[in-house]
Every structure is written in structure tokens, then in C-alpha cells.
Amino acid sequence: MATCSRGGEQADSEWRREFMPNGSMRVVSRKSGSSMKVAGEYYANGDNIVEDVWKNTISQQFYFREVK
View 1: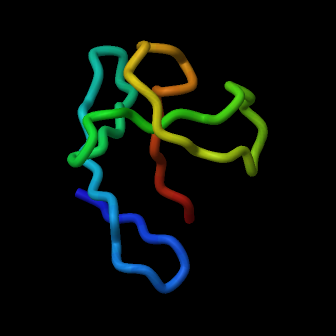
View 2: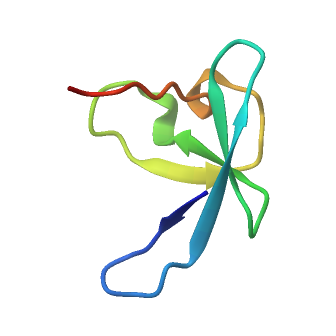
């Protein structure tokens, strides 16, 4: 579980991860049930992340890796 907050506000979102059969991860809001996705469905570094209903698109599937 992860929490997200804006500015100095109280954390208003908790997220759970769901592992998908293809090895990716779906990140789901515990409060709303909606999923994280890359806004605009672009894949460049620095794009915004937003909540949206699950549509099983590539912009909603995440891969996390260790950075050394």
C-alpha cells in the first residue's frame, strides 16, 4: 500500500497494487477503485499520472524496477 498527498495536506489516497498475468502491475485506489494511468497516454519521462476507470490499456499498466 502507498499513500499520496498534495502539498502539506493529509494523505488523501491509498493505493494497492495488483499484479497482472503479463508481469505488469495495476495500481488501484482503495477509496474510489479507479486505476492510475499516464495522462494523455504518452510515454515520455515526466508525464502526469491521473486516476481513471480500468480499461486495460497500456497506459494503465506499470513496471517497477530498482534504480541503482
